[in-house]
Image 1: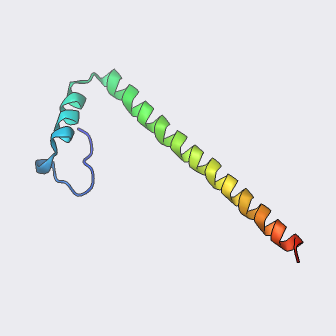
Image 2: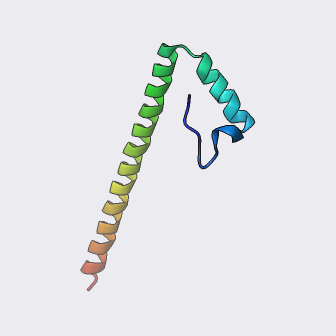
Image 3: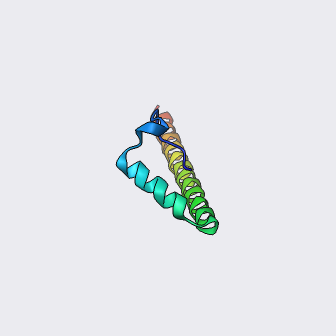
Length: 72
């Protein structure tokens, strides 16, 4: 069974959540492993892109700081 979202209890599933839960229950173990691996890969990729974005932002701030220091 998949984890719920937010504060919804098991008895208050939305129709979409119920459909996803039913689909999940009908998957084979191999299909579940594949989907879990893809979800993890997706999260890793998202975090890697966030790191790249933050590194770029830090580099930009350092460039601006250097430009301001040069103007003194």
